[in-house]
Image 1 (cartoon, one colour):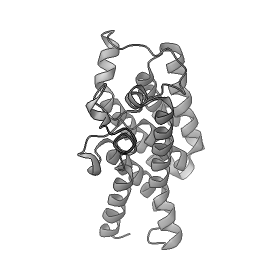
Image 2 (cartoon, helix red, strand yellow):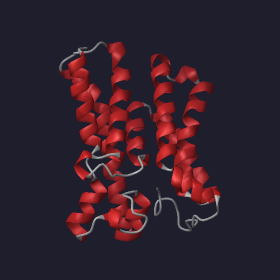
Image 3 (cartoon, helix red, strand yellow):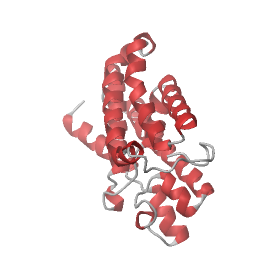
Length: 218
């Protein structure tokens, strides 16, 4: 696969990730920039608190779809043109996934001020590995139910992935090495995007969420 083609499609995945669903919905239907309210971010918890539970759920679903489509871009290219070898497919898929996460966090269409990357990461994992998706989501939900901090759940869910792969390497077959690298990079990324919230939790300044995870989820 030629370098120019890799760069071109990686930019395409980044642009898919850059679609600022929460920001655009806020401006279109509520006449506000969500980043000017609440916590000052486009994360889903802030969207729900400012624009309501239903809007938060819609944005979550759209961001999951966004991540899924970005990762599946590699599959579409592989089927349509065959411009890279079969062994390159998982590498391209995960590379496009990381590009989409970066697009979500630093969206070119919204002044490079986006969300924190949890739901788009969930969509990317759903396209790559249902098993990894289940581990990611389950760990996040368990941590939320125990501690009632959704941000903490997102980070712990991401950090659990490389350890799970290390314990069950046979599940991923030929995808083992790229999957391990991908999940390590993803966990570092989500840790960094949630670092301020983690500090607030550590110092006891973060308010616990009292409702269920489907009403307040990162």
